[in-house]
Amino acid sequence: MALLPANPQWRSLVLLAIIIVVLGVLPWTVNNYWLRIATGALMWAGLACSWNMLGGYAGYINFGQSAFFGLGAYVTAFLMSDPFGLAFPVTIPAGMVVTALCAVIIGAPTLRLRGAYFAIATWAFAEVLIQFSSAMDFTGGIGGIGLPPYLNERFFYFAMFGAAALTYLLTWALFERSRFGLKVKALRDHEPAAEAMGINTALVKLQTFVLSAVTASVFGAIFAYWVTFINPKSVFGGDITDQMVVMVLLGGLGTLWGPAIGGVALFGVNRLIWMYWGDTAFYIAILGTAIVLVVLFLPNGIAGLFERRKQNALDKVLDKLVGSGEGGHP
Amino acid sequence: MDLFLQTLLNGLLIGGVIATFTVAFQLAFGVLHVIDFAVGGWVVLGGYLGYYITAWLGLDGFLAIPLAFVLFGALGYLIGPVLYNVRNSRTARPELMALALSFGLFTLLRGGMLTAWGFNTRNVTTALSGESLAIGPVTVPLIRVVAAVFAAAIAGGLFLFLYRTRYGLAIRATAENRHNAALMGVNIGRLSANVYGLYAGITAMAGVLMGAIYSVNPEVGLRYTLFAFFVAVLAGLGSVEGALVAALLLGVVEAFVSTYVGASYSLLAIFTTLFLVLLISPRGILRRGL
Image: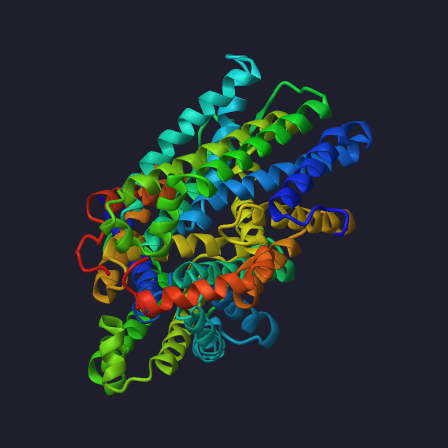
């Protein structure tokens, strides 16, 4: 890295500039096939980041993030097809509102409890949305909904790029550079202590959850318009959440760039498998194995490899202060 | 009226089988403090064992029950310490990591089974398959009655073990307060491995019964995991006695919704109930949860 400046802040700025320039000129240098893959990679990097807001920064695992991705997709599909035929940009805020409402309804009662209850509630919510959208007529049942096709790969590339960039900017500003982020991290590391400091933990958790859900819904909306056809399994399916979880764990829980690293890496593996074996159940087994291996051997993810020493020191201090953490708090 | 009675009886019988593995699930949670997503995976694995014992060896499906206990009990005994170590590790967020591990295990089981056996459904064949039993105006498949009897025997054995033996006492003490149990000389690590083995074995046995009543394919694991969660929330996480009541209730609710509203709405009804319970009484309807 001799080409880059030594000062870490300048170095990350230069790296960021390079990434933005590369991503900005990409649509004019590659063909549509690779552009679609790049669009998908951006979407997954953004989705992983949305999951990381709650999972990584607040320490609450959401096993139903696909519910919010799917809600965004379904609202857009529903409003853009007959009889409404609304314009695409109008449907995104509509999806965000619906998603935020659902997130409040799910989160308000369950986020007060141990993390396990929240994990159960979100997971069950996503499973039920699959059932619900399969059974109802207005969602098109198992067949799903088709959208008016718009064949402009560059548009979707830049839509995903913009959404992903905004997501990372928001995460950086809110969770790395503000009092709000400090509150979230404080409740993650020791909830009773955070409460004792006067933080309204229930409210902060709910805000984080709604933010995370709404972000996912935006990607869902763009995704629906991009693929022009959605059905319950394709947008609510558990595999979508599985992928987000693996991406964040692999990249590094609670880090800014971890989800991007994990997202691009796993999406790459996904496309490779798809190229050689097609759509296969074997991929689910690989996802499962990846989760198990990362939890056992790489609990801080790829990003954690770079700051392992710092993390260990922090753990030691925390252990001294808090003790071994017997059961009690989530 | 006949349909009503029939539905009620069917629901209670199914609820009895669900009770077997949800009681074990609660026990595992009480001791390990991990919500085990893999529970549905163990059920399905048991069902497949029941299928293959007939397909390969030509034996009756019920003979798979003891085999399931030994085989998956041993497997659970090997996995238990791993879960325990992650749950009690010194990483920043052990609860979250353990939850992720069990979720990964579940995904691995589901993906592995889908790869090996595909999406086709299989049946566990027993000597009683196809027979039915008439009790007054009500006719039920004999297999359901026998399965419920087996389930009751397994659950009864478990309760006897928990309440009449010293080791059962140690398990209950650990579930109540791990720290104090350790001070009384209970080896928590080894006990956790044993309990996870016991739980996996019992769940697989219930899986054989479930496979004999319904059919089995790798995707139904999700459904059984949802059942276990539903019962756990309704009873309060970790409450073993509550699980018995909640499982019977679940069986009845599911039967009535399937019969009177439609099978595709049963999960919807279960979830709505689950959510209302979380909203109104988060520690379970009996208010016994952790």
